[in-house]
Length: 135
Image: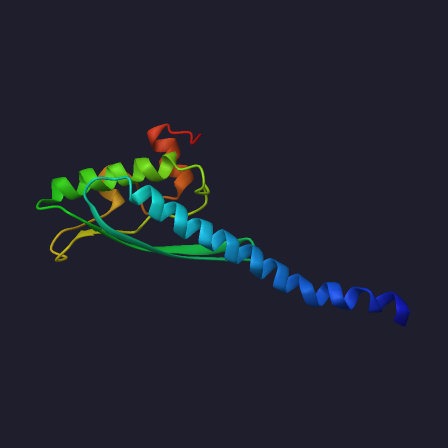
């Protein structure tokens, strides 16, 4: 019985490392793809992501700054961003979009509720809402 378990110990020890590395690759993909999509949208001053992927789940946090003098301008830029995210094939349906979008001095802050979403949508919900299938 002892020899039967000896082959399993190296595999059991390596499994968490393999899963962690896989999560790191997905987290980098998340951060890079969100930033790339945001970079295509006019009116985005800066956009930074922090993504975590561990054991088949994770979270996405973002700070998005837009160039807007009015709430209407901020909402229009937010909508353009959501459409760009939806069209990006490297973004997974389960990943969340940013919670809020603010102008440079923070006097204007908008969220996806202003576009008809009941909360912070994931990419699958955004794609369905706009009828976008990434290529």
